[in-house]
Image (cartoon, rainbow, N blue to C red; front, side):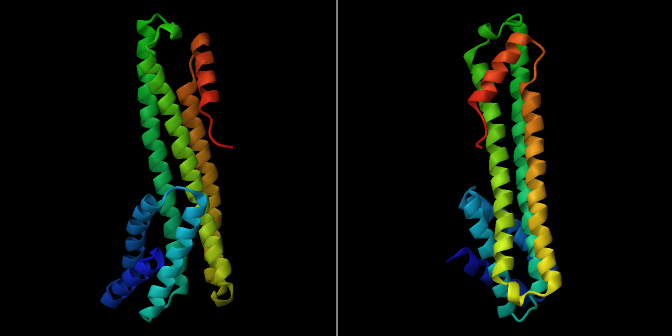
Amino acid sequence: MSIKERVKSDVEKIVAKGHQVEDEIIAFVKRDYAKTLDDVGKGMDTVKETTLEYLEGVEEGLKAAGHESGKLVSKVAEGLVEVSRDLGDRGVDEAGKIAMEAKAALNAALEKAKGSIDSVEEKTKKQMKDAHARLNEVGEAGKARLEGVGEGIKAYAAQKKSDLIDSARQALSKSADSSKELVHKLARSTEAQSKELLSHSLEKVSGWLGKLADKVKPKA
């Protein structure tokens, strides 16, 4: 069963119950979309297609159950952006904690080695490298996910252009734009955490950290 067919079926069931339909659908989408993104992967094109299918599934489920769809689909689009934002923020926060633990371990090792980076054990150096790589990884994945969500919403809006009322079209456009803004916000957050990880007052250590950053760069 495709994502669209599954979502359509689930939405129909929610509408059939007739209990706080709008709230129940938004709650369902926020739960299920996060899991779906975990299942399908992190590439922008994959997330775009998943998002498009998701919105189509919600729309078709609402229509099949005899429920008005335009306004609610727009709210669902907002929910999809929120889910993607929260996943990105959570990933960067978790990676940031790992990064600070790695830096604390490095500082402890430097103190033991009297400030000599050459005397620091390789496992501690690897811990720093892995932490920096992890920060880059979650930052890039979060940006790709948000970009994919925005592109999926735009694709849905373009596909349904002739069927959408102005308010629904504007709401979808706003959700797509907010996804773009969140990409930049996430990038700034990742960059700040990376700078904090790689900052050090000792000249030789700073040089080693700079080389580490060159080895583990985010994709262009």
